[in-house]
Amino acid sequence: MSIRVMLVDDQVLLRTGFRMVLAAQPDMEVVAEAGDGVEALEVLRATEVDVVLMDVRMPKLDGVETTRRICSEPDAPKVLILTTFDLDEYAFSGLKAGASGFMLKDVPPAELLGAIRSVHSGDAVVAPSTTRRLLDRFSSMLPSSGKDLEHKEVGRLTDREREVMMLVAQGLSNGEIAARLVLSEATVKTHVGRILTKLGLRDRVQVVVLAYETGLVRAGGGGAVG
Image (cartoon, rainbow, N blue to C red; front, side, top):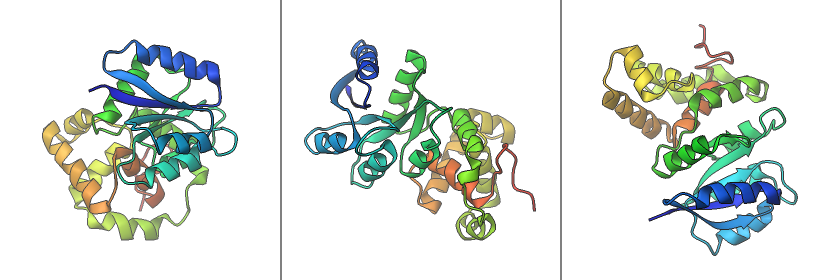
């Protein structure tokens, strides 16, 4: 079955470009489009979608609030935020709203397609190292009460799980974490699954966000001190 993709962007030419790229793939089809968040929510009520490519800055209802409303629904499609990076200070808010990751608008086609497939397959992680750079850039948006939150949330984890969580937040893949900790990749995947379950998180992107919020990882990539 093809991956059903929805394009949400107020720029018609950009949607056209994405549609052409996706239409050439045997395992993907664009089933819906919208020019703003309000239209997107209306279309989604009547259309089954697997992955939404979501612009941030749009009229009527921006991508962050649209993402929040989509992800609050049961069996919601995955959302990939589209950002210009240098301009969109809202991208971090998009991740917090429930997006499974984000892509740059000028992303190479092969990378975009890989991201859509990754999210659809349940990995729900897009370029973790890029996610880290975004969080570093917008670290001023993070709350300052990290210590209390860290004790409350991350205290549920074992020492090894905390270690894995910190490396996930620093942008390492499962394979890289396995090599760093001298573990099998399957063991690392198990640890990541337990972290998600214990903390009530949906995917690795939320692990990254929580790690920064709690102070487990500081902007700049290092672990918390003290």
